[in-house]
Length: 579
Image 1 (cartoon, one colour):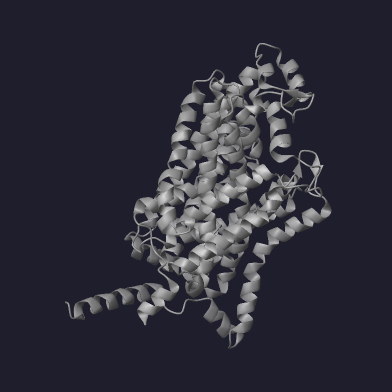
Image 2: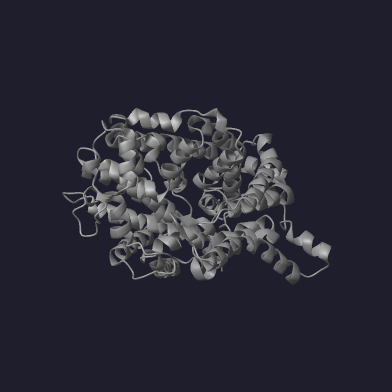
């Protein structure tokens, strides 16, 4: 009967070795936020002074939450929905909220599609975003070769830039996006972007169709090659004229920013984004570990790798921006952007100014594609694993899983066709701004810490980590889980709601119905937590106190159950006929 059950549900599997786990998690957490968000935040919020709140919040929020999620996944050996059944059944709504957030997060595959589009054009003899002799250019277009005049007056150069549109901007808005007037005008589907989107989803499918067996092998290339590209771009960037001017803007410490509350809020937000916290995927990835894997040690190394990559990426970005400002004869702060503008306008425009621009552009967009690919296919894997753990009989068997993965990829491809229309950028920004925002992250962090730190018990999770790794965490982590993280997350949650600013793109203001849709997206994940708790309280028999007691505690002591299972396995081995 046990063999029949295993055939029906399939084998959940584990990582083949420790290296695969480390590379998959590194590939997931080291992403676009490290390349285009962290350097910009350093520049905007005091340069080197920004490292003070960033480093402090990494210690009191980032590392403790990373350890919490990793240990929960490794102990329960479940996805981010079913894991809560083994800790606190009443809190399963946290996992349901993660499912909703994952649906919005999957839209980030559009960045990969954009990067593929640019990569194809990078092989042309004449890079199209460097000149104005293309069919999509307007009369106000200015090519990069006209900007090469650093000896001119700075004010005159700045005025000239404001009165014209760069070739890179026109390529981005008119050739790539075919930008419409707003979200009300979605327009037609861009067939070239659609093809790039299809390629991205096909690659995603073959990365995860066999589960950890396939994704664990893919990361040997996708997680390591971006570092090779980063090193090449770093060496080249530091040798460019004007590079150190850019680095000065990046790192010069302005201590006047430290008392500003916004700086600390942005630092905390960056920690959540770059460490991929309160998204559930860390729980899933750790669930494929061996029970005795040292997740305590892994946590420190992975967090150090993530923050170190962010810091180094700043040198890559700002050395090139300093070079670009030098060639144009303008201050560095006039060419600094964050988000898609940095990756698809400013940086390509800068590489077009270098000798052998095709080579440097190919290096940059290959790095961008692989960073986006790593993060994206792991997101999809987390989504699929969690659903498979909910319905193991139907979704975990090998052939059934492959079909299910194909259905998920196909459905998402069809949904994301709205992102490759002429108004697709407006839809994408709506997903990005409202789908998985700081308010969602802070709320989930509060819930996680309350459940694990107070209801399940910080002492109990400490004993579990000691049982798994052989070493007990520092008491500092208990203080973070029970007090520091919930308080800081609650403060950030309130400030976000009080100081809320509407989403705008350039001068475009969304219609009221779009803002209403955005807030619906935000609260669609948050509301899962109380809804699930209320539903379980209604369906569970007994008095209110009995129901609450039953739903807030695991059925058995987890350590005792684990040890009992190991003792039974040993007894079977000792009493078997072969023995």
